[in-house]
Length: 416
Length: 163
Image (tube, rainbow over all chains, first blue to last red):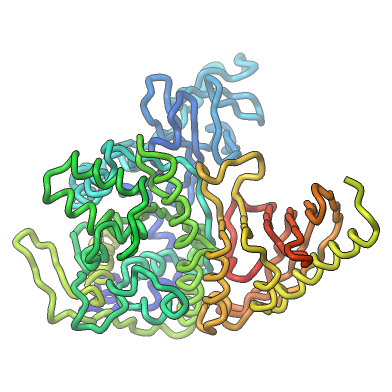
């Protein structure tokens, strides 16, 4: 039975069937991940001609490759002959072309079919080139769509551009690198649970209780104090893009980099601070030095987790893989950049101090979705939201404004 | 350097004891085995890889290992609440004596984990260990534990326990 999305998502209540139904998942793959724009890679992963990474769009296999014209291409990884994967390793360099190891069909980096062995038997047949996705890049972030009639990229990215701009502002060179490898953490959950959780400012005291009790963490003052004391916010940027302004809670310079009050600032961080003050106006420099990079989600599969990137590749309705990697600053010292590596290991991935606890809780939640559909109550803070002139909605960080932001946009797409 | 029979026995006994403490989530006992220069690594890449330039799955220095243990001991580290029942088999042990009271050890392992924190699920971890053990004031302790999972570059489930 087809899902009625207008009924299933209404007034801050969503049906648990939206996480637990295979039909819904298949429709999401089509409407969100195939017809819409998705994040596929960061262009610093493939610096040289022929460099590639394997990525899925929805469930389908693609290759993101640096073409001979130095441009990033996203082409199908399925031979147009009999669907065999053309590249099977996760990353590497293609020397000149893609050759299928089944019957030797050869394709160019742009997907063009260049050669078919024993060509006589193919005479008169319209063998196909590899389908290519439409590609757009913003700040090095590569997005793609399989839909030739997709909405314009600028319209899709919307306020997400400002989020990416603020990431780039944090780099003294204005450029970032995401090329140190990916940790892949699998949870037995629907993908949407990871999105909801990553933009949830309400769970920290409970899900991350062990961190709060065992460590003196920077999160404590910004998201683990009483409701009235929290100055941080949840923001619905429209278009499904969402931010928690965790950084706004920091009161001391470069707390987001682990600088502690009363201790001398390490030389590499001092150097970084000077470079930021040199580069930016006072206002922007202050924002970078105090708040740091954003904690924000770009619809549908990219999450900027302060100094890290997460993106999602789902395998089926209840299997989701989060890939995480740190954001490094192009041109900054190895000393500074290695801090981002260690921050990433500490906070994200299956053995970190944060994510596996989110994983355990959302896996329990996932189990709860089995059985008769129930109402998931996401109405918290509905009455204290502030709607700006541009339609952007702001509320207390613990409010489910962020989840509603996701579901409102989801509903628009899924009902279309 | 030449390794004596008794040194070989002491080293392997240490390795088995460390495994037993980890298997049984005996966090304090496990932590007592660590030297001050302890490093705990689960790399993604298995070749020569510089941790100042490449991401690892897990990289603790002694202070971070202490934090990890403190979190596990709170009883609300959900990824290990309750702790997973586990058993690991360590084999193919090779011991190299690199200095007086210093040993590099290579081994293979298989570890069965029953994940009981959400949906009960059995997971088999397979890989190789590399250890650096050093005697400090007459007591053997662990200065390095490096865990090369066969699937480190692929998706893995929660790794909240001591592997």
